[in-house]
Amino acid sequence: MTGQICFLLNDRQVCTPANSGLTVLDYLHHLARLRGTKVGCREGGCGACTLLVGSLRGEKVSYQSVASCLLPLGELQGKHLVTIEGLNQSRLSPVQQELVDRGATQCGFCTPGMVMSLTGYLLKAGTKISFEELKNALGGNLCRCTGYASIKRACNFLVTTTGNSSRENIQDLVAKAIVPEYFQEIPARLRQLSQSALENGKTTADFLIAGGTEIYVNYGDILPESRVKLLNQSPQMKRISSYEGKIYIKALTTFAEFATDPTIVKLIPDIQAYVSRIASWQIRNRATLGGNIVAASPIADGSILLLALDSLVMLNNGNRSRILTLKEFFQGYKQTAQKPGEILSEIIFPAPQANKINFEKVSKRKYFDCAVVNSAIKIRCENDVICEIAISMGGVAPIPLFLKQTSNYFIGKPVSQDTIETAFPILQREISPISDVHGSAGYKRLLARQLLIAHFSKLFPDFLQLRDFYTTN
Ligand SMILES: Cc1cc2nc3c(=O)[nH]c(=O)nc-3n(C[C@H](O)[C@H](O)[C@H](O)COP(=O)(O)OP(=O)(O)OC[C@H]3O[C@@H](n4cnc5c(N)ncnc54)[C@H](O)[C@@H]3O)c2cc1C
Ligand code: FES
Ligand code: FES
Image 1 (cartoon, rainbow, N blue to C red):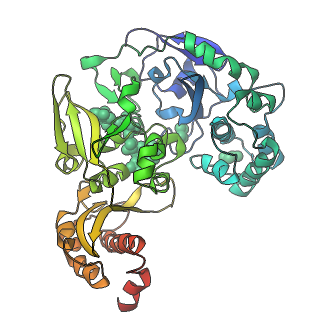
Image 2 (cartoon, rainbow, N blue to C red):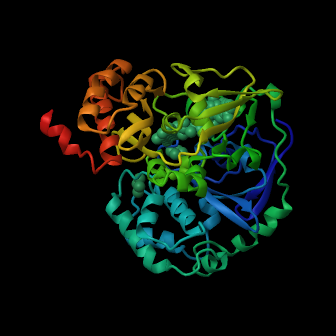
Image 3 (cartoon, rainbow, N blue to C red):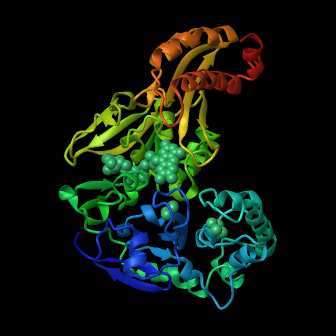
């Protein structure tokens, strides 16, 4: 790693020669000696280490909550890092005050993370403050002792005490003491700070890091000392565009960006509901679609959806690009067709114009949990006959599985209970689940069947209802 990493740490500018791969959490504790941010699971799973990272977007700064235990320090170049110390004012902020007043903090270990997530929500430009959204903002923050009733009560009171007036205006947030005054100067100060990308490890890097939400969980002990290349350095790596009936998604696009992109929302109206089932805000703000694919987990939610959308992936080695279908990309358990030196640069799929789409996920917890079995479908009918269909399923094979035989069977058939029931044995022959910590093979086989029924009964409620399948079976 060459050069210094320069950023705004709360209200002061800092430059550090520390390794890009060091986590921001360790930087704060060991080098900056700011220890208000708590260390919990170190795997993105508890929210104790939540911080806000602000990036210039035109004239404004956009803040996102992130898990600092999975955030490489090099990502802070030219950005604003807000820790719990950076929210300190002469009195408690309304967020802190409500948590105290409603008895929503006991040992206090989770409280800094909760304060950061709630403040992050209030800082986000957009629609009115709502109880539901405040509660959702805490989806990645676990509390072991207080109990969620008092935390929810604090959220409820926050809606009243912070009001709805022009949240987009940072002055308004300063006037309400939600953030300190220095926040008003941050856009100008960030403009002065070098926005240029860090000089990265290039070809000599031992690890490529995108969002870091998978790789830090697996290699968190060695990454801080390793030569890393941060892929997340250029805004061009994050674009979503459409051209001649195809959607082009740069691989570094995060799940949060994907789910809120107007083109995607128009084509897949339920996308926000689907993506809300993936991890938490802290993770979705960082986790990329490319990382989800390359990590090749058989239960990766993004891969499952993208398989049913008939996606292609573009791989690039710096000199040459090649395009594969996503189906070909997955070759075995966590094995892919990616060659050494290749980066996944883009994901491409046909815009699903006249198609119905659905995504289903069964997990032990409804939110913030990985799938036991997940599945997606894209289907088009003409005159009530299925003329195009793609079904994918995760957790039932060593790879995210495209159900080729099951999909082919449906072509030319009417949507009916009989058609679907005849598909069950074909589906069961095509999958090969194993028993593991997520569930037994038998349970996964049962879920595979249930998810197929769920797809059709959701997409064709006039033809089929869930109860039809349970009165006869
Ligand atoms: C708490 C928690 C909850 C999670 N919940 C879910 C969930 O519900 N559903 C789900 O699907 N996943 C979940 N994940 C897994 C993870 O967040 C996703 O798989 C994520 O999309 C990985 O993307 P990333 O950008 O963070 O990848 P990284 O961790 O940065 O990288 C993963 C791997 O891919 C390589 N890589 C990344 N991008 C590229 C590229 N463009 N080209 C070449 N190589 C690349 C890296 O070198 C690394 O080997 C969860 C993770 C955590 C920590
Ligand atoms: S320490 Fe648990 S999410 Fe970071
Ligand atoms: S108050 Fe103790 S963990 Fe939440």
